[in-house]
Image (tube, rainbow over all chains, first blue to last red; front, side):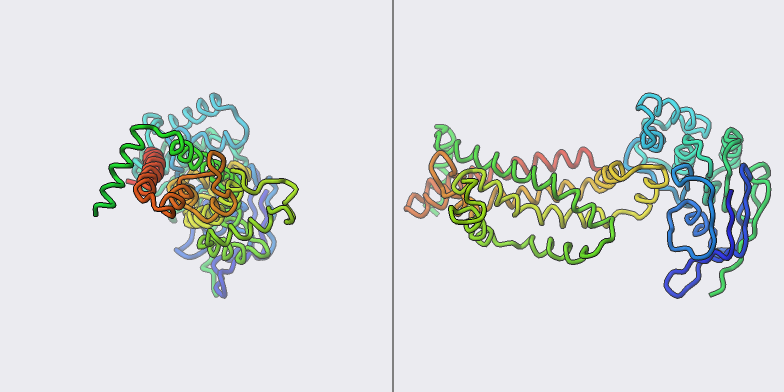
Length: 197
Length: 233
């Protein structure tokens, strides 16, 4: 489903991401591991279709609209938590009521259902991340690209995320994370190379 | 000081007596400026977003032009508008000169660069994650545009407010394109110029205070609206 050969991303003269080879099959769950600056976030953005500056071969057999990327520091819109969680569903033409119902289910799975009516700015870092993940998971995308999805989460929160991902058996998932990702979240790891300039 | 005090007394008297001529001019000032700003907003916000979010040939020139246009002298707009709308001008057949619609048109051009520049700035200043998040969640162009406005709402409200403030207080366009015709195109600013010019300083000042009240009322109204919807701490 994903096929990469000699992928390079430059910012000015600096090469910030280099992936010689990477193949990911349908429904695989892969963790990207590597030091700071090895280009994990950049690779995820390229795969999400948010960075069009990449050179080399990068084939993703999923339409852009069925890929969802969640930032390392997720951005919540200046609206209620429920409106945030419904945003993608609404953008896909799901009716307001149905979208709110589906979004509420995912907020529940990630343990933040109680925050549904709150304004997004009132949330803590961990809460924001859970809401952003619920917002992404609610779309059941074929390709999920999660940048450090467990940062700021307590062990219970990490379990909830892993359990929620279990519901998305159809999705291929790419996660960037610390070198030790909790069991169950990913089936294999891909080591990123430090991108030499 | 006595002149000023007389003006205040006259203003109170005028307002208390609800003199039709004053109310007429005040009402015209309000609806003409509001309509102009409404139209400028409808054109200017999409343009501001486009300039902030899309890269295309001539974009930087347009941004620069809009910024320069914020300092557009109203008399200049008046002269150009006059040339265009006068009987022998290209828009002469529309017979708009010396009608309120001519003022609406002129003020629309006055407010447009302000609304374009300020909304462009507000959207440009947004966190880059706003666009990325909207895009990755599948929002198409129209929804993304709406999201940008909503995320930059404080700046957008201020842009529109600035446009309105410029329009309701301007004199050049209303005088030259409207012609200050009593009961037809007279606005508060042209009435003030007229009254003061013919020595009726008290009446001029009185209407100046009415203008100030109208401008303040709208400004405070929009500011309150902005505060209710803004997320600033």
